[in-house]
Structure formats: structure tokens, C-alpha cells
Amino acid sequence: MALRDWPIKQKLTAILLLISFLVLLLTSAAFVTYEVVAFRQTTVKNLSTLGRVIAANSTASLAFANRADAKEILSALRAEPHVVAAALYDKDGRLFSSYPADLPGDSLPAAPGRDGYRFDRGYVIGLEPVAEVGSARLGTLYLKSDMKAVSRTLRLSAAIAAGVMGISLLAAYLLAAVLQRRISQPILALAETARAVSTRQDYSVRAPKLGEDELGLLTDAFNQMLGRIEEQNRDLRKLITELERSNKELEQFAYVASHDLQEPLRMVSSYTQLLERRYGDKLDDKGRTFIAYAVDGATRMQRLINDLLEFSRISTRGKPLQPVDVNRVLGAVRGNLSLAIQEVGALVTNDELPTVMADETQLVQLLQNLIGNAIKFHGGERPQVHVSAQGAATEWIFAVRDNGIGIAPEYFERIFVIFQRLHARGEYPGTGIGLAVCRRIVERHGGRIWVESTPGQGSTFFFALSTRNGEQAP
Amino acid sequence: MTEAIDVRPVEILLVEDNAGDVELAREALRECKLRNNLHAVGDGVEASAFLHRRGSYASRPRPDLIILDLNLPKRDGRDLLREIKEDETLKRIPVVILTSSAAEEDIIRSYSLHANCYVTKPLGLEQFLKVVRSIEDFWFTIVKLPPR
Image (cartoon, rainbow over all chains, first blue to last red; front, side, top):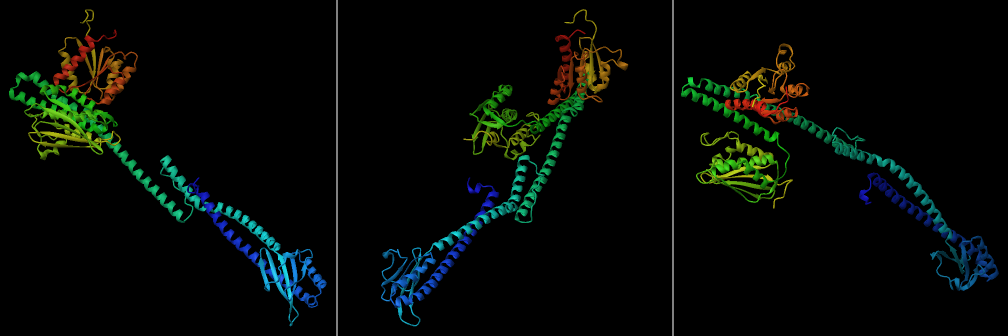
């Protein structure tokens, strides 16, 4: 597992341990180094003291060239096991006596070097001048001491350092395990809360605050954010409830309109007609015309109510959008309009049309209204309607082109408003609902509708349907 | 089409709160060749009393056809429809819903409650008269009904 994927607990513990380990390592190294240096100094000091004592004792034997005496003096070095070799040189630098007795001759330098003490390949070599106090030099004492004591000290101090380090690291680990919680716990609590929020969609939970540090601030900020989301959700829910209620009221209104408003209307129309039926022979032409007006008014009123109802149902009765083959939709529209098409001998043609995300029933209604209008508002020529579609970046743009009477530019917007008509009822029948329904349907699909037209030459109605979630435009 | 032995008039119960519509129905049935008795009641409670021959309806005949409006005072037509269709003795009487509502939910609900057919009142007088006559014609001369 990569380091960055470690749980934060382990990361914190590892960091704390690593730092502790490095600090302890450096401290131990310093300790061991100091021990070794100090011990070497002590070794040299001890050897030089020994050297001075032996050198002082050896003056007589060198002065009188008494080898046996010299040998005896040197053999006293047996008490110092770390001294592995010793020798006395006379004042001319010739070997006079050596220790121990079985020392191979070639292990000693042929002549003594400079006076003093030095380290040489794991040994301390000492050269001490032999001289009577205040008189000429008699010779040189050579001493060679091993460093076993040093390495013993080194091992000992290293072992102590390792022990201290082990115990310290254990203590550091235990401390880290306890202390990392101070940092990791608020973060984990925050993460847990965030998970609870996202899985349960419950914005009422709050992360526990465990301190006043930056993590506390973060927890506060997070909780505040949750509070705000909760508040917004509450507002939204309230809004949705209100919308649902007003929608229900609208539905209720639509129902009332379809039923209760029509009842009295039917009475008006039925009884004026019954009046004509029963008493028609007692009325003059004017009376009968008045009755016709009353009946016509009631009929129109009913149509308006029905249209209004249909208009209101576009959004309340809409079905979910699904892939719909517009070629098939056009086929259905042709069927529905076959009577009108035959009546005026209209020619309805089309290009290959795509499949779009739509409410099929509403798409049928949309095309039916547009093509129906194209046929209804025909000019002197034989009505020709052409349906085509063009794919743009994110939408399909459909066009319904006709060769009808056309529309003046100043009415391009007005025609899409409910119950807006451009012609007298005598010229062209209808309540003026068709294009309003078209616009409502297109808007429910998240699209746009507009018209381009030249009066006398025909109109082209365009509507754009988004390709999002649907077939991609080429 | 009427068989010789069947001389008694057909009994039609019209449950309708609108006196205007009752009058129109009478108008339509008056000109009908089939002998008929139209019994009109104004709400669901009255209709239920009529069907069960309770109170002042004790001597009334059992109807051969019920024409029922949906929106009625006191007790609504849907409720009455359920009662009729759940009653062993009444459920075989055909019930024609004749209402001004063209709402889809009313149509679905009515058929779900076993209405025999659903007709929306037309606006025009002639159409209305025609519809009522068609109902009568259909249910009494075309359709075979169970024996009374």
C-alpha cells in the first residue's frame, strides 16, 4: 500500500516513530562516539603513565647494559595484559631487550621512531625516552598495547545505546498511539459524519467537536455547512410542498373547469336550443339569430375551457421522456390529419428524422399542431409542408416549412401566447391555443420554438430539442 | 323487436341533481317509441333509498337501467356505484354513467367500479337528446339483459 494510502492513524504513528528513531540514533551515536574517544584518551594516558614508570625503572639496566635486569623489568608488564609487546632500545637505537620472551623478532621495529603515543591499526604504539633525571638520554622504551578494551567499551556502550533506544522507541510508540488520536480522532469523526450524511442523506447529524484547534474550526465549519444544507433542504421541501399543493389546487381547478363550469354552460346552450325547438315558430328571424349567438357563445366558451384544460395538462399529465423515433411520430400525425390533408390536397413531405428524448404523445401533438396550422393557413396554392431536422452541437433543430399565408414579423412572438389570434373567427376557426400548446410542450422538453416567415410566401416553424441523455447529434 | 309478452314499460332510474338535465332526459324519452317510466332522484342517499325501496320508495319498481351522474350532493355517484356493484341483488342492473366530466381519472375510476358504460354529456341540445335516446335504444333493444 502506498504511503499516501495509509490510514491517518498509522501515518501519524509512523511519523512520530521515525522522528523519535532519528533523534535517538543521533543521540546514541554521539554517546557512543564520546565514550570511545574518552576511553581512547584514557588508554593513551594510562599507557604513557606505564611507559614513564617502566622507562624510569629501566634507566639503570640501560646505563649498565644489564639485559637480565631489563628483561625482568619488562616482564613486569605481565600485569598489564593489554600490552602485547614491549622493547628497550639503547641510545644508538639498537634493540636491547624485548617482551614477551617469545616475541618474534620481526614484529618489532628495527629502530624506534619519534617519541610519543599514536594509534596504529588497532594498537596504541608508545615510544618513551629513557633517561636519568637531568642527564643524557640512555635509550627508548617501546610499548604496544591492543585496543580490546576500547572495543569492549564500544560494544558495551553500543549495547546500552541500543537498549535505551529500544525502550525509548517503545515508549514513543505507546505515546504516539495515544497522542495521534488527538489529531486523527476529529478527522475520523468528521469523515464518519460526512459518510453518514452522504449515505443516509441525513443532514441533521453533526460531527463531534473535540477541541478548539484548527480541527475544531474545521469541524465547526463542516457542521455549519451541514446546518446550511439542512436549512436549504428544509426551505426546498417547504417549497416543494407548496408547489405540490398549488399543483394539486391547479388540478382541482382544472377538474372544476372541466365539470362545474361546463354544467351551467350546457344549461344555457341546451335551454336556448330547447326554446328554439319548442317556440321557434313563435319567434321572428331576429329572435332565432339571437338564439344562434347565445348557442355559439356557449359552444365557444366550452371549447376555450377544454383548451385551457388541455394546456394545463401539458405539465401535470406529462409522461417521462423516452427515446422516440420522430419518423414514427410523423406517421401518427399523418394518420390523425389524413382528413384535413385529403380535404385540401396537401402534400406533407419529410427528410429522414432522428430519434429524440421526448414524451411521444406530446411530440405527436406538437407536430400535429404545427402541420395542422401549416395546412389550415394555406394560401392560394396547393399546401406543401416539409418536415426536416438538423443536428447541432447539443440539440436537434426541427423545421416545419409551409407555403402558406405567412406571418408578419411583428407577430412572431404573439402567436405563441395562449388565445392570441391573428385572424377573425370567420376566416380561420380556432381558439388560438395551438401554438401556445406547442411552446409549452417544447419548453417542458427543455427546448425552444420560434418562427421565420415572409407574409405571402410561407412560414417555417423551428423547434430545438436537446440531445442530452438522448441520441448524440452527428 | 319488443316481444309481445313484454308489455310493461321499462323502468329507468335517473340519479341527477341538475333539474335541467332531468327535464332534458324527459324530453328525450318522451319522443321515444319504447314505453318507459323515468324515475328521477336528486342525490345518492335518495337513490339508495329508491333501490332498496325504503321509506316513501317502498312501492317503487326495481329499475331496469340506472343512469348515474358522478357529482351529486350528500352522497357522491362513485360511492353509490360501489354500493350497487357490491350488492348481490342490484349488481346486475346496468349502470350508465352520464356526467359532464371528461376527466380521465373519473373514467378509469368508474370502470374500475364496474360501471357498464361511461358517457360524457354533450354540449348541444340535439346531441344530448340523441345520446339519451341512444342509451335507451342500446340497453333495451340491442343488448340482451338478464331476466328480471
